[in-house]
Length: 92
Image 1 (tube, one colour):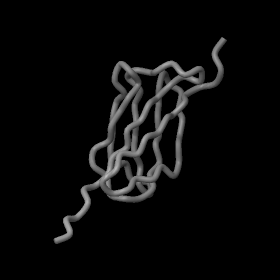
Image 2 (cartoon, one colour):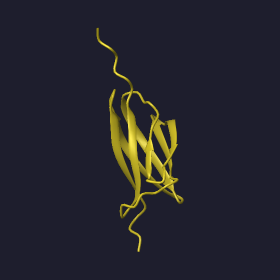
Image 3 (cartoon, one colour):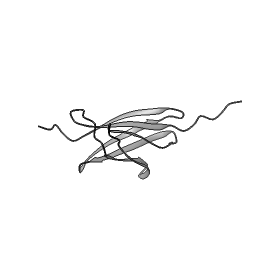
Image 4 (spheres, rainbow, N blue to C red):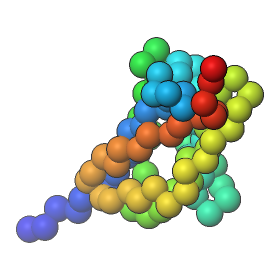
């Protein structure tokens, strides 16, 4: 008997342009213009989405008033998709 695969997740890291983790960043996971999940990064700049259907998602991040977007993050059934979002330009 075939068991259906469980939904997938997105596990992400939000960093500054020079690679430092950003705690407390706001993360929106968007599917076709609809926000399907809201997360806040932990002290290591990490977030994990709730369970998601297979498909492509847009990740929108706001940290310290600066926004960043990653389009086309693919989620597959039964898998956790890693993504890194870099926020901001080079800092002096």
